[in-house]
Image 1 (cartoon, chains in turn green, red):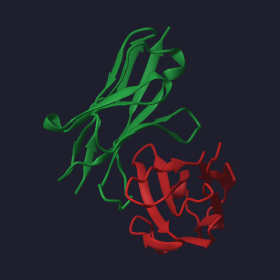
Image 2 (cartoon, rainbow over the protein chains, first blue to last red):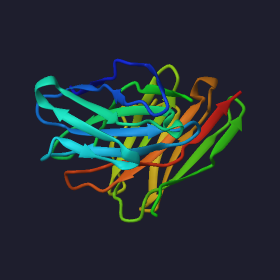
Image 3 (cartoon, each protein chain N blue to C red):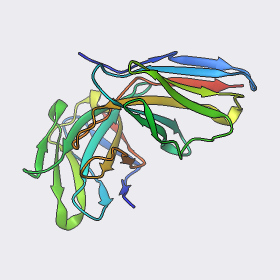
Image 4 (cartoon, helix red, strand yellow):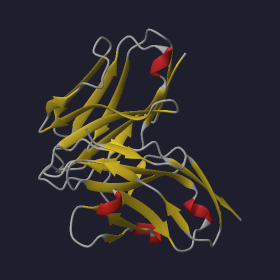
Length: 114
Length: 114
């Protein structure tokens, strides 16, 4: 069965600092990987996704993520955080070949200090 | 900018009452998902449909919950009778099947059962 672990429940960074949110997955093959962001009172917005090919994926809002097969990780990064990035971030894994059922991590709450 | 829409956005009801939540998937998407989000359980997949047919509803309490797709532009999630423990945010997401599917989320229905 596929699973996702986001080890950090809360992270606080200063505005302008760099950010890395961790995501580890468990899956028998190369999965599809996603990062979503949820602002308070809002739905989940897709930040980026990895299906195959280049292991460094660029997303919206200046975010990127790197797929590392050897570490079963798909960490989300941003070089300089803005106060508006404060939100909850979810990593998700889905099976290759379709099937559609995503498994979500428990989320990481990001707080940005001004 | 195509989006998933959900109605109502907020619902307050009394225990025992029937609750119906509606979702309009993105035009052209043939897969619809219902999720429930709570502080304790995080994001849980309740059910999903492809081409209007239910594929998996194993996450849904069968005795009181039901999900349907009367047509390709409408998905419904019904709770009858509602209980306080059903209080949560219910999200609908849609996607198009074909292997590399991405789910796009609606804004959610925030349900409070008193």
